[in-house]
Image (cartoon, rainbow, N blue to C red):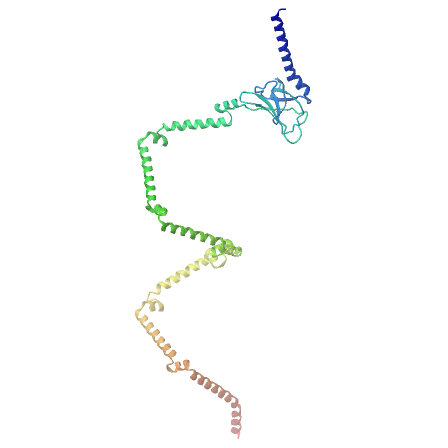
Length: 388
């Protein structure tokens, strides 16, 4: 064996030994250190996962993917992952197993979240899912797939419709872009608004005065202050409306009044009382109508001098003059009586005369009583002397 063959043989043995040690370090060490049974998970898609990819539990590396098999007899979740783990995982009913990307370059890992709560049954099949990586999510986004991609697609469609409408003279924006007269109208409106703003700034017009005139501003502030005062009074119990809104007793009385009015209205509708009978009793309503007609006829005859005393008094000048003369005479008599003139005036107004008259009446009353008492004796004497 020459030198070249010997060196080649030694190199092959050296690198073979290094490779064997490396393989043993990766595989045999994990197998020897594993103290838990392998975990089998069924997923719908491997998503590029490879044997040897890490298995992490809440961010802690706890094992690796030992095998990836396909079970074609299953109708769903046909990819079976065998996970070699270093320690038991306390899985619960809220667990989550997901194939995730480890970076933009496409590395994969199995992420396990044990969850919290009731323990996962030992005989129950464990299933997982595959999360979309960055490139696939971007592809779905720009391809219009998924919720966000669908919204982006609709947004782009609406943007295209808007851009198309800019060239359509039948739409408002298209007419502004294509038709000169509509553009001129919009420009004139903008100039009018500028003119209005200039007038407001110079204090012209009602709005301009309201902004620049201090007197008008003070009046406006005074009005607002008055409204605030009225509002404060409404909150308090000052005033009738404030008491109605805030005084419980008065509101109760008002409610009772409304209830009474409601009962009165209901009774009126049912024909109770005079107003109710007038509204519901046809006979009484007819009598009331006849009374009004009679009153109307009487008032019409009041202007007719040939229709009764009241008509003659109101319509005949001669009778009216006589009535005025009679009332004047009565007024003169009552004036004289009130002033103490004449016998009746003296009797009514002279206090001494009234006292003397009262005394005369008293004396006459006594004389009449004495006459009644003396009458039987006089009759007896007259009969006695008449016999003899």
